[in-house]
Image (cartoon, rainbow over the protein chains, first blue to last red):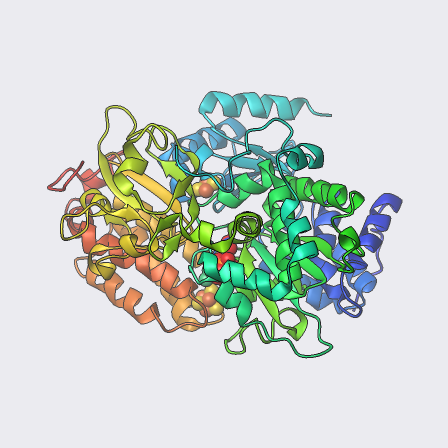
Length: 166
Length: 446
Ligand SMILES: Cc1cc2nc3c(=O)[nH]c(=O)nc-3n(C[C@H](O)[C@H](O)[C@H](O)COP(=O)(O)O)c2cc1C
Ligand code: SF4
Ligand code: FES
């Protein structure tokens, strides 16, 4: 059963979604699933059941085909998240550059543990695996932006900047 | 200065634009290939070049291309693997970000050689900003007549599609990548059938790494023999090395294969030595999956000769004293690094990234992580080291895809070469769990 959806793409995103679906050969529209989930998350901030059901209808596939994909891949937030999701690289090469200490500082600064959201709803902290920027570690990502060569001071600056964003 | 094939123009201002790339000689390979060569002639040049897959497995690219099935009336696909998720590897990211047209040009000539009219570049989803760079480059190339219908009047049509992943290391494995590209979970397929026969949408498909495809323009322009003249023995050409960890200058370097490991680490042209005041302890030469080596074995072969940056020299000695070139993720550890902690970190990675289809991998990676976690955190048991060796052996060779091996090797090699360090953690838990504590016993630092 699909839920009656209140969520839909904005007109611009709908146009983009149609263009994405048209990229694949006839009958292979399911290939658009990962890109459309990204598009939905970009719009809504996370990947809700309503959003997934909407995409299932758009691609003419079963909702379960969307859920099983969204939960397999780590980038889709299937629970609500804060305004800024910090995806912090926890893998070996970044740790060699002091990644563990900077992560500890970040947690202290935000007063949250990994997986939690700050009480004001501004920040969610996630730990992720290698982001393919190991020579510039420690590294985290917020949406499309990479922040590299992190130090405690640099983390404070970034959090200050992001907090100011409307 | 060593020969640069991929990165010669990478620092030219504006090289990410079509016009500047073209001024530097870009897209001449497309003109030459489409106007003067047949697809088979291109495959022949790539074979002569001897270039081996740069994604990790090192399989000869020309040979892979020649295996592609060509049934009548069935489309063929080229898929570029830009999933780059092997810890320690960041060269494809660097190349695509700075010089996107090099990949686009390579995709055009490679697609033409394989007879593909729709080709895909599958980029890990975290690199969304790079996807936008590639899409802009594709739009530019299309506007100039290098993509789309009837390219340069040759009658050849090609569309390029950039596909984002969703965050999953396993999608770098080529059959998992194809599943993902079809909009499914990234579960690797059983082989055979190989992608060359049944790949994307069950059609014949070639999957190649970004760096592999990027070499083709130079090969077309200069010939396969000229490419094969660079490098050493069966390790022809140049290789991008992603250098991270405790060297003075981490970064991406293009080297001629055959460069001594020692020169790569110590010469100013490359890593510039170990960071000041520290000593060289260990090396992971080819991404997190390959066996770790202590400094002395990283620099010299068992017979005392210098070890070289090549497929053959790095694997000299087998797993007893050697390792692998892999993806070229070169991670250097100085004496402040705890091998137990790093091994636990890597095993957590593989456990997290296992797709869960085969029990030796799903259960074994979890078990290894758990045991390593307890050793690292001061709760190790006396039999744990043997237990780890045993579990790693049960995973190796018993899984659908090579992620199982990739998870087993780092653990087995760390124990092979640093067993005393593991034992010290078990025997001295209080000392070993102090902040920053590292084993300082007998070992060969350089
Ligand atoms: C777990 C796993 C992860 C892999 N990740 C990548 C990757 O991120 N990029 C890549 O090019 N190849 C990766 N490979 C290798 C691919 O399966 C495949 O061999 C490669 O893309 C072929 O291209 P090449 O011959 O040009 O190297 C991975 C393999 C495995 C088993
Ligand atoms: S080896 Fe691991 S990652 Fe590969 S198919 Fe089996 S369970 Fe999945
Ligand atoms: S280990 Fe952090 S980016 Fe690779």
